[in-house]
Image (tube, rainbow, N blue to C red):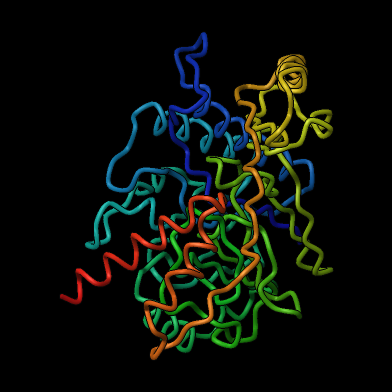
Length: 357
C-alpha cells in the first residue's frame, strides 16, 4: 500500500517577489496551489491509496485570505475527482483560537476528505485497510505525551497503521524562523505498532530516529529566506516495503548561491548571489547578467562580510590588577599609531586621579 504525504503548505499571497497574474491571483499563492496539483498528480501516478496532510494548510492564524481559501478549496475538490481520499490534520497555523475552531472545518463537506481535528483513529472506505491515529496541534507537549501513552487499539481489520501529528521532536533540525516548541517530544515517547510515524510543523524533511520510524514530512514549498537551499516537496511512502521517496515540486525556490552555482537556477527561483566582499564591479555586473539570463523570479547580489581581524593579544588582568598599570597596555592594544599612545595614556592616568579625588 502506498500513501502520498505533504505538509506545511502555508498557502498565502506572500508579498515578497509576488506579481499579479492574468487571472488576478497573487503569483506566490499560485505557486502553492500548483504544488498541490503536483502532489495530486504524483499520488495518482504512484497508485497511492490515500493522501495525508500533516498540518498548516494556511499561513495566517485566525484569519483567512479569501483568494487563498477559494484556491485551496478548488484544489482539494480535484483530489476527489481523481478518487484520492485526503486526510487533513489541523496544524497551529490552521487554528483560529484555543476553543478548537479552525480553518479546515469547511472541507468536511467533501465526501473524500477526512479532517482530523480531534485525537483519534480515522478511516475512509476508499482506503480500506488503512487506519490513521491523529493528534492535531496543541502547544501542551505534556498532553501530547499523555495521548501517545493512551492510544486505544487500532481497528482489527487495519492492515496498515499510521500515526500523524503536528509537533516538535527533540533533535530535529529547524530553520531560523520556525517556531520551536518547548519541552519537545523524544522518539521514546512514541509507542510501537505503527508502520510509520509522521509529523508536520518543522519544515525540513528528516528522520528523527535511527530505525527510521519517525519522520518529518517537510514543507511542500519554499516560503521565506529561512528556507533557502533546503529540500522541499512531498513524499510517497510504500508501507509494504518501508521505503519513503521524496519528490521535489517545480515550485520556485529560495537559493543562496555563489556566481559559479548560478547554472542550477530554474526560471522563477528567488536568488541571492553571494560575491566576495572585495569583488570588483565587473564581477558584480557579470553576476547580475547571469542572474537575469537565468530568468530568476527575483533576487539580488550580496557581498559577503569582510573577515574580521582576530585579536592577537590579550590583556592580562585580574581582580587585584592595579588600574594605573593597566592603562598603558590597554592603550597599546587599541591604538594603532604609536605616536598617539603616550598622550592618550597620560589622559587616562589623569582621569583616574580625578576620579579618585
